[in-house]
Image (tube, rainbow, N blue to C red; front, side):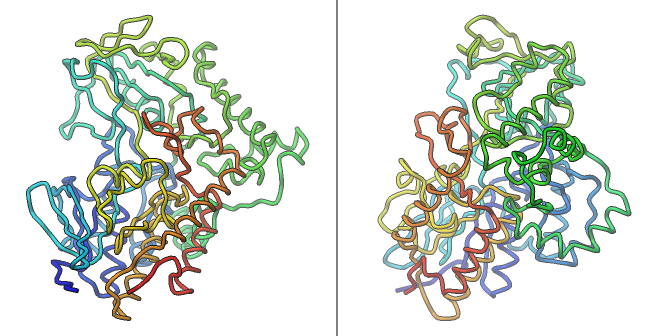
Length: 535
């Protein structure tokens, strides 16, 4: 079996995951090349250039932790860094760790095929270059492949019409313009307040309203920064062991259903200080007990209605028929107040007036005609699987990942896939939904440990076992059934893949807790990777 390769590992994606892999793979002494079709590193933060794009995790733990030196040297300016600041941080990491020689930008991978006769991956680019590697690794991100809605007439619109994650590289002038935004998820929650300040009008077409939690942005102060840096080891350990990979003080040892209404209300109010902390640092049963979940949901809705002047608009923005966290709640930076402006409008396209088509001049619903200068498709992503299905990745049998996942998207712990030898994935399907840098690093450690074992012991192939894949998928499904997240197609949640036309919803997320999942990864390493076969 020939193993002549251009480099040991080819990685697709130069965001947090790509940089983490460069660090960990170089550390074990193998050559690595990271390709990205963007013109800069950053992944999500290179593509999502819309106004207001920012992290929904607090910046001081939305970071890579492999270098204590970098963690001490870098300073965040505020609680939730914006896109530009996150980009600067990733540049700082790449500079400090001499990663640039390992990165090839403006290069799109269009296919990857395992060569059975040689035991290597053949990787092709859009400019007809070919590379071979022993290890092929996806670092493309769990929310990187946009969903473009199949709306009649989209190509007719004479103005700019684009997905929010494909914002024009040149500055888009929306001042004094009529803007239509189709979709009302996290991107719209962030961009609406800023665009409304200078656009002539902004009309939001909403299908399913979200539970939106407060962000309460605040600047980083010297005292706060010192407290963080003096306790960084403890903060990272909190992330490592938390159910959602966050540096939160939970569990708290109390349940909402066992607390008096007056005390429960006091705790809800006291903890209403921004971020997802409110869910995890108030009570331990909000995501486990339907009664407790409704208590929390009612409180969130009450807070929202206090900030929206028009009762009709407030009612349209009220989530109905599904529990808190069945859809990932965005964080609010003035979203609700934006609807108090005369130039902001809300259209309910689920029940009241569905979109009929896009015309040359705007959007036609079943009831009205809307003229726009710009249309933004804030219609979300094909989460977890989209990037891996976007181009041909063919395994041992010649089957593509897309075909393999036609009915159910199975993997082993989100890091490898049966029938695809020597292929690894960062936060693939059936990994937890958690603070992404934490999950990324835990995945990168598992992958690098697996590759190190192969290199140290002279193995050519790592073949994920179908039995291990079936076992993990069954476990993920069973855990999911025990949660409040089992809501099927009713809310079109991207966390279930229910936002994809012509595809059945599926269990894409491990809800057993990120900390438990990270322990499973370490257990796998310590037991010699029983989920795969080496030869």
